[in-house]
Image (cartoon, rainbow, N blue to C red; front, side):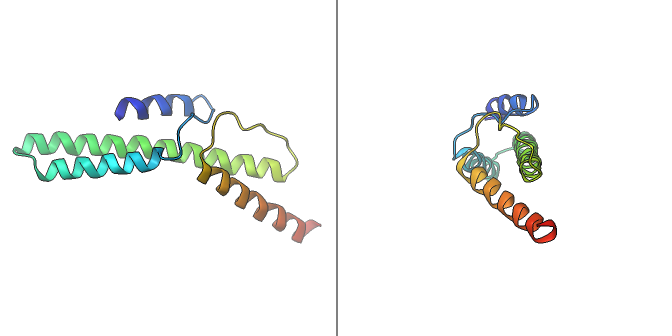
Length: 116
């Protein structure tokens, strides 16, 4: 999982949306849950600490991926609202497309309300 997260983050750091499936974030949450269960069954403090480190690493990586994608979506919606035609480079999952469309619609409505 860490290798996959590192690969996705690498693409995100290049300014593109990495190709992830709609269940990417769900799978990461499930993996963290599995690690927590494994931690409860750890036999030594060292094993527990190793699992804690992995949980922390996974959470850090997925947070960075989310933040990059989220901020890029918001910037793209702002640009589109202001009339700039920026292309979405890469792949969006269904929930991101829905989020983008909602914030874009809100921004357009707000602009129309204020300046017509």
